[in-house]
Image (tube, rainbow, N blue to C red; front, side):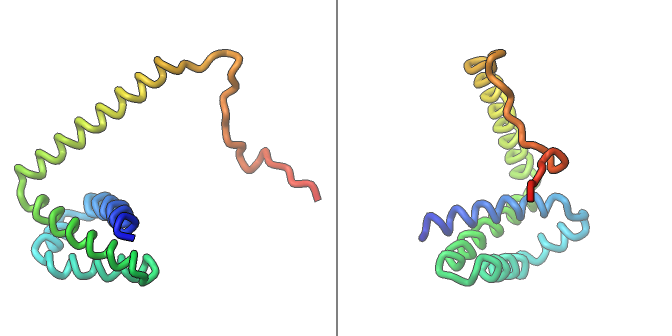
Length: 126
């Protein structure tokens, strides 16, 4: 239950990060000036949207820690730059890993590419 709550909190925290950086600068500054309210709303919404279960309660608690840390980091320009650097390095490493996988496991001519058919190609017989 704790691990499930942590996983849900991490996913919700990632969504919060993406949403936060899409917001206009004035709204981000407002959220930074009101961290307790931001934290409380994020926790309450997480608890309600995840079904008001014990796992949702753990997820909301973990998310509260994540949101507090993220808001503290966003206020500190040096820490924010350091995190951006880490994200850039992780993205580069992930790209290199993908290239390495393509080199190690090349697609041969006898292998067909698997694609998901578009809805226009699906025919349903009645």
